[in-house]
Length: 210
Image (cartoon, rainbow, N blue to C red; front, side, top):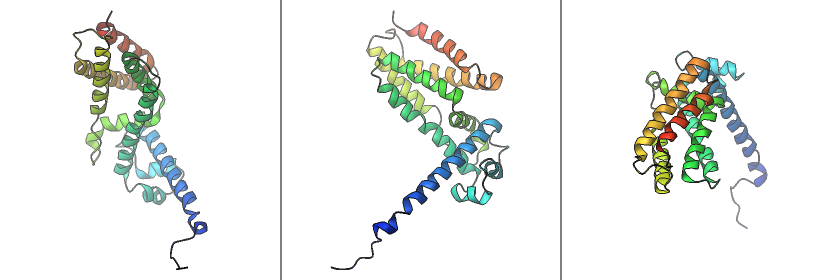
């Protein structure tokens, strides 16, 4: 039999645990960074602050994230990644288009109230001019999603015939993100669900088909 330089399965086995440890370490650093960014904002946070919060050396954090900008980008990316499974779970319920739209908004409101990664990503997007690197463009994904859901609801006869789905999406996005920001400033989002419920009921009272 010809010989081969391929490592044996026995020698390959340690790689998986090492990779898994690195993944867990990155996730831990990212969660700590999100908590600090959400509480204090981008300008007042240093890589050392994150290292201290993670109970790691600055060099260990630097190994995974080379600077504060890289950490901010990773937090914002994780913020957006949060919506993918949430939206998929809502769609899997088999709801009507309007019920789906409302359930997505309900899920988003709850995430903004309780999920630190979501809160941190939102704050970093507000502070994007202070971050020395490009971040994903905010709001466009929500506008596209809600326009599509509103179009489906209109075609299903669940919205008034004169409803403009794109205009409705713009109003929802502007009102929702303004509401969560004001709730954050005034109450630390303690009243977010109440304020969101007011917003939802007022908007959809005017466009839902009778």
